[in-house]
Length: 202
Ligand SMILES: [Zn+2]
Ligand SMILES: [Zn+2]
Image (cartoon, rainbow, N blue to C red; front, side, top):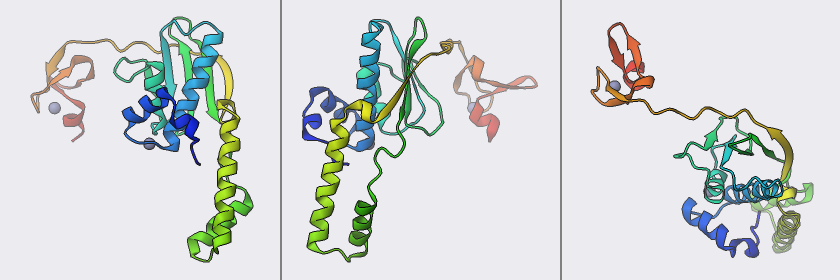
């Protein structure tokens, strides 16, 4: 996909790219999701409340989400669920009311003709005209997709989430094997010994 210049030029996009370290489609998808989610919550007048984000992927897009929503891993209001979907839920931490965005199926799939041209190029059998034709198709498809705005990328479903408990801080104790301080609630007890998870496992 070709990311349109008008998006690359946006100040908030630049901040995301700087944080992430490079420009890529994954980051852009996260940017789109955050925009759509925040817009939805603004309409519900919930943006002033503290937000919580649940990401069902750990891909590039998560960085744009953290930058734009202020939900961060360190604050505990950015929660990763290992599902492998380009899906993000944004909700108010106070009420749990929010929205889940999920990437539409085949949203970035090329047409059969475009795919055939790609194959030709890959095998080295593409003429100059083929390459030109491919480039036009690819650009047109990218533009059409981005012209649809964030709605073109994601489905939107209102929902109320059950708020996860905030992780409580507990005092640290020393692991009986490596001697490093470990949050007490994370220690594994074996008889009268306590081990960190790594020492317990290995
Ligand atoms: Zn990336
Ligand atoms: Zn240990």
